[in-house]
Each structure stands twice: as structure tokens, then as C-alpha cells.
Length: 393
Image (cartoon, rainbow, N blue to C red; front, side):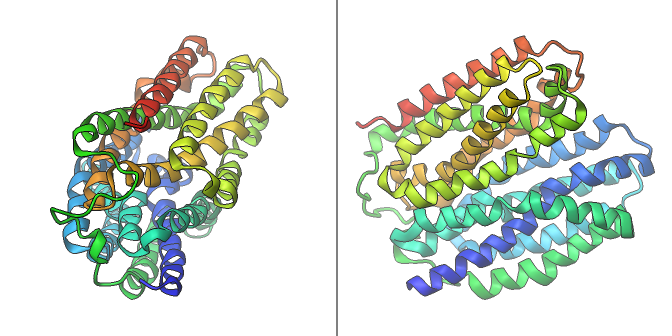
């Protein structure tokens, strides 16, 4: 693919990532209370349906990755947009718990086919040696999803109600994402991305005998990181309240997370080419360890809470890039969709179960020290496991 075509593909995928993450992943945070109130269900029932979608996304991620390798990202992501529209439409019409769970199950399939891992594999098929730079640019756009869709969801709720808002989101999938995938994702894959047996070993990739151990270590590192991020993003406000911050202050501190993700990606985009993705990955995961140490020290200190939010957001923003670039350095780009899908499955599973595993943190009165120490241990193990995965052999 020629450079101008690559840089048309990146903004097209960036727009579809903003819409897919915003409608399928972030909107429930704003619309959830109204959905619960109208259906007369508990928060556990609603977020159980949401967690089901994440679990199913984890289950089908390897299959989606193999489909992208075989048929190309254009076919899979186009079909994903149609399924996403159908899922959002079904959610807008639900009147029972059974229907709600069925609709979110369909949304889980759409997540696997339209969000980052599918987009990374698709981009890999068409960007050649510009993959790392193109991926960073893509995540810069994707990082705006919550910034765009939290207020969009709120206005839609105020003006039209949650059902019509979900229907509007379904229309965005059909009217925007579907044509962008059809128009800008090339039909044919580049020859080095086909994943056929006998593909040349790219410079810097591991020999076959070392790949299994590295893959397991990398999967553990990314799964633990996903677990920690899921716990903190869901329970951060109540944890900060338990550390003697007011609700208003806790929300204000938490609002720094999104902008710092984007800041981290800008820094990586600007200076990251000076370092390998392996080095950047160790640094980003190490920042999460530092962030948790700072969070443990917060005791009514707004300044320390802000330092935590900055480190946490910066770390997560860069780790998103590392998820897409380090596997290419370790395992090569042949069969890359399958590689990313297999890596995504344990991380998505960890994200799905984490909020429930740490459910006591949803109550501000719960002593957070033992729970945060467990997360700190997970973060240290994540860094160690990542270091094992990327060590030179």
C-alpha cells in the first residue's frame, strides 16, 4: 500500500474506533442507570449482561483473528459494523432481562470484530513498515471515544431517552462505520500479511523454539494489566472516596485519566521511534507499579491523587500501543490477526471478571489497603512477565 493510502486508512479506522468504542463500550456508563430504572433490574443484572458481552468477546477473539488472516480485515470489520448496528438496535427494544442479555451477547461479538484488536490486525495487513507509526496515530484517535461519547450519550439521554439514543448509535454504525470500512480498507492484503506457511522470519522476531514461552509470558503480562485497569476504571471513584476525597474531587481527579492516555500516546508518537516497543512496554507497565504505590499513599491528598491519575492514564495509553506493536516484534506479522486474537482472549476475560472479583471496592467504606496491595503485586508480576517475554534470546 502506498503511503498516501495508509494515511487515508488511519483516519478512517480512527473514526470507526471512536464510534465503536463509544457506542458499544462507553455508553453504558451514562445510560446504564436509566436502563436499570425502566427495566426494573439491579445494577448487578445490568452489568452482568455487559460482562457477558466482554466474556463472549474474549471467546470469539481468536476466531475473529483467524478470520481476518484468511479473509482480510475489510470483510470482518464490515460484518462487525452490521452486527454492532443490529446489537444496538436490539438493546434499544429490550423489555426483559433475557432479551437484554441476548442483545449484549450480540454486542460482544461485534466488539471482537470492530474494536482495537481487529483494527490493529487490519492495519498490519496494509501498512508495511509504517505499522508502528500508523498504529500510534490510530490509538490517538481511538483515545477520544469516551471524550466524545460520554457527553453525546448524556445529551441523547436528556433529549431523546436511552432507547432512541441507542437507536441513533445503531444508525452511526450503518451510516458511518460500514461505508468507511467498505471505502477505505483495501480488499486485498499485502503479500507479507497473508499468514501463509513459509513466510519469511522478519528481522528481530523470535525463532520458533522460543515463541511459545514468550507468548505465554506476554499473555500473562497483558491479562494482569487488563485486570488492574478494569478494576481501577470501574472502582476508582469509590476508592478515592475511601481515601477521604469528596465525591466531586474524586470525579475531577478521575477525569484526568482520559486526557493522560492521549498525552501518553502523543509522547510515544513523538519520541517512541528512538526506542524499541519492548523497552517502551517495560517502562509503561512499570509506570503502573509507580501509580499504584502513589495511590496507596493517598490519604486525603488531592496532589497525590492527581499524580496517580497522571501516571495511570499515561501508562494505559502507552500500553494500548504496546499491545499492538510488541507482538509484531516478537512473532512477526504473518498470521498477525490470529496472534492478536489469541493474546486478546485472556486479557478480555480478565477485564470482564475484574470488577466482580474486586466488588467490595464499590463501597467507599471498604478498607482498600489489602485490595490495592493485591493489585500492586499483580502489576509487579506483569512487569516481570513482560520482561521475560521480550528478553533477547
